Image (cartoon, rainbow, N blue to C red; front, side, top):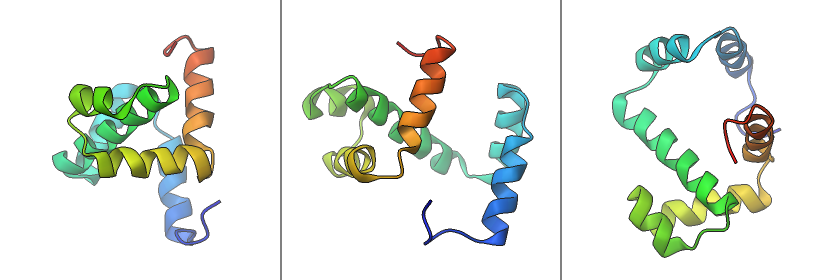
Length: 100
């Protein structure tokens, strides 16, 4: 767990997210919570993480996502030394056959 962000408000936000039951619920909630730019940044980082997980090279990732090499490096650090959050999600999406 990341102690830098741990708080009662953060816990409540995450509990709220866990109540969402569909992709449509997520679109509604997150479009109210975040700006379009923030959401596109989240989606881009997630796309970068998926490509890194598939062992793609940086140049290919830049071309496919438009992400900067700094963003790719940041995501790669999270994959290597982070809280394992990406891997938890990837494993669950693979189990549901939503990812290869």
